[in-house]
Length: 115
Image 1 (tube, rainbow, N blue to C red):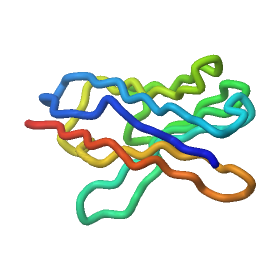
Image 2: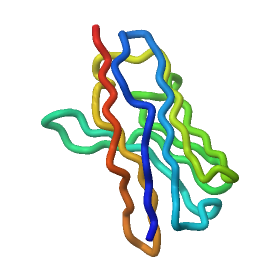
Image 3: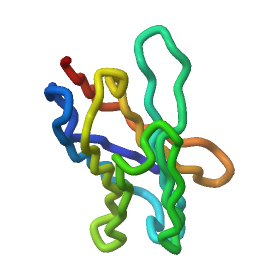
């Protein structure tokens, strides 16, 4: 059974930085593409960033240039470095992968950016 566990969320002032981590278990991590999504209160979950097994990255326009996704296959962990945070980045951030054709989600970690 694949499990994803996010950590690193918290409260930060606008302009600040946070690094989120997502530790995976129960999968051959190195072959998985990994992604981060977020869901603000009252809104739909939206794509934030993705990194493939070869290290190719993709970002939502709203975070391009401010967020960086990376991975450490030895630690089975994917990271999201967030800089120049804005109040509109406030959301629950979820780690995601696809395993045997099914979406797998972590429990989420709250990021709150105060103005």
